[in-house]
Image (cartoon, helix red, strand yellow):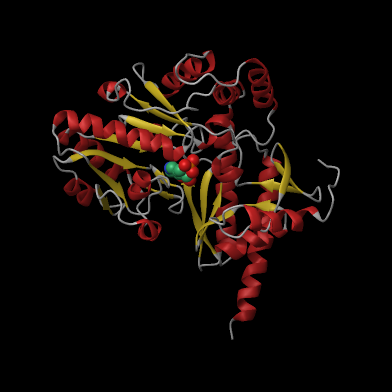
Length: 415
Ligand SMILES: Cc1ncc(COP(=O)(O)O)c(C=O)c1O
């Protein structure tokens, strides 16, 4: 894969203009990408990078997938927007498909625009469900280390106090318990609880699987208290961890799931999917979004789901996962810096013996492999479902070189 080089001054120029005109809310960027094709992202100099990060677990079909491009182009030329005063075919088709892949015949979807707004919808839905039982039934239980978004409600539900501090006071309705303590969770769910919100694998929290006994405790406590179990599948959904949704690999069935990231392979979408009584908890006029269910975005999502099914990409992802896990276990046996691997499917965390994940990620980038440090000592790998075994071999070789380089540099620094 090659690309005509664009002007070589463009990277510096763009970074400078970004610094001048874009709010500086993210870490300081050092790289510019101008094009994508399959597993590759191309920088302004036309150099291809193996993208094993997928824009934070989003582009699961790779970049510029022809089926998505065709669906978006066709829909953009047909009908782009109507608002939710009217019904359009792609949104209805998508909602029906989501009901099928959740396995919930009575599922209903609210379409949002991203993960946070999908969770915001779920939290509002849970509050309505709670308040119908009792006025004070408005509290939410979440887990330490979770990440659910950056709106005020989802920020409070995010179990990372450092992210709260600049914005306090928050709503004051969230109770947070350790991610691996079933008894603490049971004790936190009271008559005032309207929902438990959690991820099966904490993505931003360091690719940390939540133990099954905590999930079971959450389900049982919700049933006993008349609360809803909401599973945030924003990062884990759409085949990222193996099945369509991570909960499908666990002993529990939630009342509500939220999905975003990979659903439209990079176009902005969020979905709050509910079953049973939760599916009708929000009534007419109680929630809305101008862009939710946008026809272009929903056409992209329909193409994503269709492509995954047509090419049996969930099974392919499982094979890739096994190859990566075996490769990391081999690294762990031979490179002292590597402790092991956690996560499932293609949401994997390489555990390091010291807090050098950022250095390893940048060494990988120098070797044209994109991964990221999701915790000081954990490197996240989230390759696309369309990667090949050869891509995996290339990535493992780049990882080995990067780890060796960082280990060498660390040893040199040690007096
Ligand atoms: C599990 C989870 N929930 C919610 C969000 C928020 O999604 P968004 O950034 O699309 O609002 C994220 C983003 O990383 C996430 O990983």
